[in-house]
Length: 70
Image: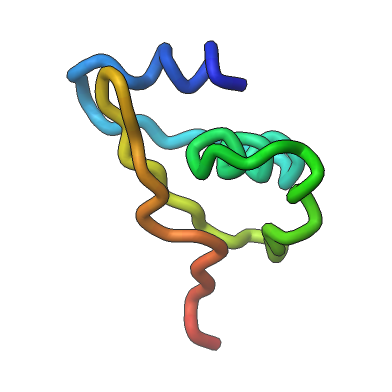
């Protein structure tokens, strides 16, 4: 997952990725520096929005599992 995130760290336009929960959770764990043993600690609802800010050499988690109000 780290290699994939590195592809998006270049200075360029924003990118939207749509995926199943598992790769998004692994990306979140990677950005937070956590191992797969913390996988269940990152809850992710169906259609939840996650936002990552990536730059060369780093990144941060901006939003996790945001939901639109009903």
